[in-house]
Image (cartoon, rainbow over all chains, first blue to last red; front, side, top):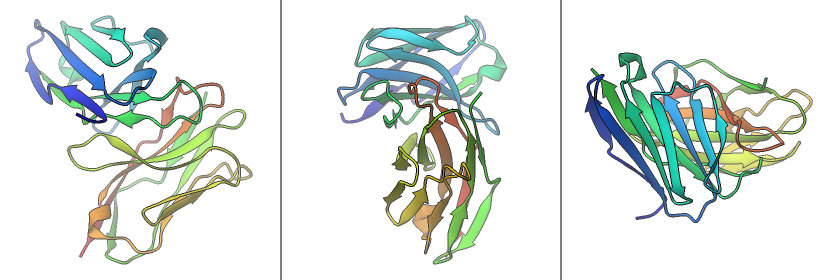
Length: 114
Length: 113
């Protein structure tokens, strides 16, 4: 595997379910990100980790819980979601946490909440 | 706070037409500027970037110049192809760190044969 991979690619869940999204980067990067991409809305940065420490949390509801066990893996744990949480969730990584760093994105998980 | 404003889409062009997608930004200091492209069913990928004023980023025939005086980073291509059909995002990273990346709304480009 190369680049940034995300699993599953598609997920349908009910509002009472608990599920997790997984992201893995094979680039040796030190920073990882979760974004939410909804139709007709700008890309929303949710969480940022640098060297496995959370450095940014943009007022995301507590029903989204991130976990970064090491610099290659990032999870997004989901519970009691709402239908408005349906979106494409993108993971990204960058070499470091500096202004000039390019972010490398995975293909995303398409989440539908029923 | 920082902001990025992109030309509204969708944009529809014929093959070999000239493309411009406007992008202006508001930020303190000297941010780094990026254009990302998203093809259907995929994540975003870097198209080009510029990290200081007057730098020109270029890739695959696309170009954009970092204009500090007009706070702009317009994307151009002289002759588009059907395969360029995608959504294009202008983005900035503030000069302090990448943790507060700001993206534009995206511009959908469709190129017809």
